[in-house]
Image 1 (tube, helix red, strand yellow):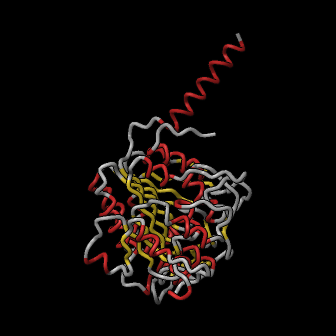
Image 2: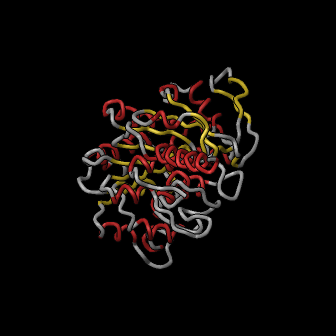
Image 3: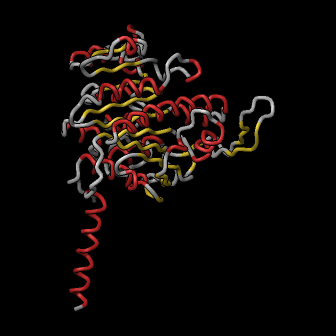
Amino acid sequence: MIKKIFYYATVAVLLTATVFYSKNNNKPKNIILLIGDGMGLSQVSISAISMQNDQFKKFLSVGLVNTCSADKLITDSAAGATAYATGYRTKNGMISIDENGKVLETITEIANKKKIATGIIATSSITNATPAAFISHNGTRKEEYGIADQIVKCGVDVLLGAGTDFFLPKDKGGKRDDKKNLIDSMKSVGYEYISNPSLLKEKLPSKKFFGLFGSLALPHAKERDYSLGFLTDKAIEHLSKNKNGFFLMVEGSQMDWAADQNDKDYLFGELRDFNSAVEAALKFAEKDNNTLVIVLADHDTGSLGISGKNKESGELDVVWATKFHTANLVGIFSYGPGSEMFRGIQDNYIIGRKLINFINPSASWK
């Protein structure tokens, strides 16, 4: 009798787990995932308290994420992004490869198989850890030339960011020693190349396109005449033409770098810029009614505190605990169909699994 009870209890648990991951009647057609690199809860607090363009207060579904990697309490961006991109934790420094060296299928690869449109945008090089985790596989995030080689074959419909250093040979203004011109390679597999963001204002390409607007990163937000929101809006305009839906990942990469430097002005500028991308995503989702918007971070950086308000400038004053990543939980903000699944406290890889199950409900997890 006891064995029977144990058997049925085990079956019930397994069925519950299957439903938890794969059965969702409130399935979105489109998913927009916005990652603020290093954007801890303090950065979100700064936005909500002081920024006119704050978008975080629009979200009714809010939760927390544990960002630990497979081998460290404190994750890096490679392992953090891999958890979201694949549904599995890995060791720090690894790009969509598990801790045993096995290649992990990414959400963009799964979407491509389902003929769902895909897009990646970053304010860093598109070979940098977070975007790379969605469009490549490598044992180390440092192999950005090899990551660039893989991106040529990734099949993503829209790629926007920086990275000419890794795509061009030295005689063309890049830093490749092998004389490969990967911009030409991208063109040869069907991409239209956008050399300047202003070209997107004139005419949106009808076929898949990519743009590299810097060697290692985009200029700081305050130094640009275009916003991350503008790039996000143009990507959505293109991707939303696909009748099967789309997946878009947008990273505000440089908040992490600003926190690494404990540079408040740099951070505030990048946070405002990231807000513009969240606004573009929410505007589309509100009109579309079939789009899930997720905003979160890969980890916290700096562990800053809000210490007061500058009487002259009116800006918040902050203090920093560190110049490094921390294990602090980060926020997750969700809007649209399926948003209720992201409330509470969850591990980062669980977020990845839930997103993948929207695209492939039959995906199984070990």
